[in-house]
Image (tube, rainbow, N blue to C red; front, top):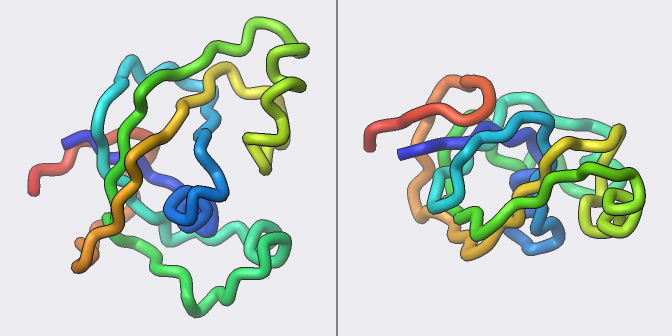
Length: 123
């Protein structure tokens, strides 16, 4: 199954439905159910900003699944500025944003070494 690596606490924000968009500069040409792999890398500034307990965050595991019902291509800056509130963390204008839905956490996480972007996992 397709799996996407996402840094913490972004992965946790997605689970809590405090973030419903994943922005990337790559077009994955993929729009269905996928697994979320919570990276071993933690974005400290985001942990502080959203007041997460760093010890609470689970890292280096596949621990949830979601779906991408649709995505958006940013052709003009005005489109990005309109969606900026939803993105929560953009440092630069992304080329694509993937709308996430139906996020579910697994009862038992699956340990896995980090890989980049989307990758295939056989469960």
